[in-house]
Length: 160
Image (cartoon, rainbow, N blue to C red):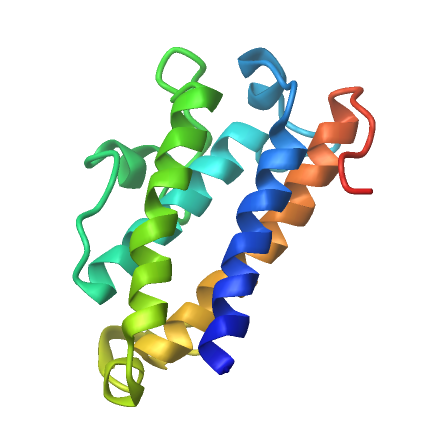
């Protein structure tokens, strides 16, 4: 039952991010918010980068190659517009991570979820299951930012 709830959270994250990025142009996603912060392009790329880290932990192939870490890894500055990946590409990469993560969640037993991870931290925890929970929290945090950035771009809210 817990796994179904976790899978539901991952499905809701994808739906929320897709709704919040609908009808946005690449130009709109590259603008930083008023008062500072990262633009939507960087945030979405960073979410995909985070999912790549999860794919590594569950033994699934990563997406997007090394560009994701270079452009969107934790602590990186937003890429200049000529290097930023287009919104459509970022969304395609994001969607492509969903199936392997959901498959892992569906098939994972307690031993798989309790397997220690290499890079343990206060946020990630110490096991694959902990890291899955941290990843979905991370996406929820950034999905909210994306919703706010959508409004900064002059679009109406997308979540009914």
